[in-house]
Length: 501
Image (cartoon, rainbow, N blue to C red; front, side, top):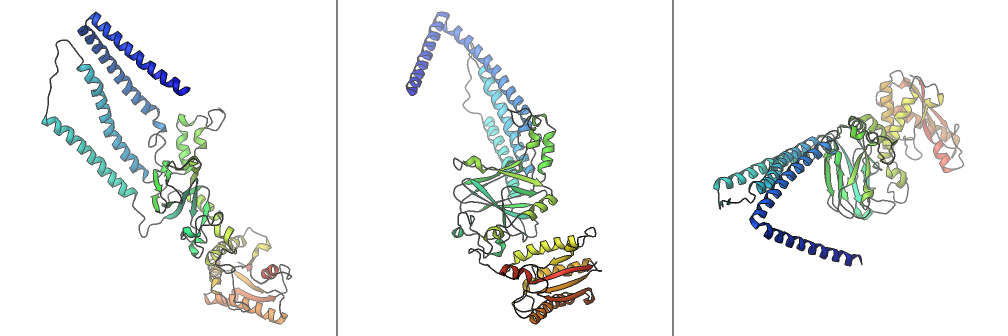
């Protein structure tokens, strides 16, 4: 029914227009056709001039009124190192095209008025003019050359890859309907390899190859957190359809293509808080963030950078928005250290772990960082807690039933060596402990030999022997029950006790 009414309305409109045209013809015949044409041309010409002034005036007014809301103007200057070059390119393009736009519209509306129908006037027909042909061919060619050359220079600058020796961090953004997976490298600073054939929904969404030790300390984040002033290389990939990695405030935009990794390199130069303070200076951003709540926080205060997908990738396209935070290097280091490796939280010692039951470098490095924190706390002169002065060295390993140190112990032992170097007056006790399995004399000997092995390693690295006392306690000082494997494992340990420093 609605379609029928619409069709009938359109037909009726045409009928009305035809009737108006007939009325005009009759009016023209009654008044005299030439007089009618002259007045009509005069009226139309003046209205076109008025429209031209209003049109260009509103164009200029809207540009000034909305300037502070447009990317590249007011407070919305680029928040990345390369962004100013892109903004400059757009501004140059705007200047040239703006000049042409204004001139063309002035001519477009002026000519109908200037050459309106007037009695006794006749148009002069010029079939060709070489000078005009040269002008309107050469000028656009010159302008295009300037724009293309500037565009190529900017493109080569923005899209150049990192070079050998560059200091940068690399992260990976994987898109799918309808989410982003943001993967960071761990302490090793390297992202591990992936294989789509290893993808397991809910277990290994990216298809990370756990045999590659670079994967073991990688972690995933729900938001993109970046340090100010650090060059960032983003690997970009899609798992299903075409997506787009878009950071508008950083002038970053790159397609995420299934099967074809792309990348973008940029350096953030404004923290989120610094950008907010820039917005704060403008009245447009003092307005309530919620139009329906006049008491809501002002727009500048709730501003956040964002990651969006700039391709219409499906019905849930809107849900691909992710929060982006740019923080100081110190804040980023704190945040980075608080993140947990996906491997260690979800894969370690499961059936999917190829290193099940074995010490691995990434784990040793993590334990090493924990050990440094414990030593720092223990050597803090303001810390009077005696329990903190004894450290259990979970990252010192021996061959089974032997006092021979395994190679995995080097990270922990080197940290101890550095501690002695840092505190020349440090004196410690190295205590060896075992569980209660086996003969007591053998356990006492084994614990003493293991404590001596740690001392001998440190002495071989230049630490004075009189700074270290090594004692084997055997099973005499358990920290847990020996009735379970877990308890016995805890009891088999090396302890580092600070005597003085």
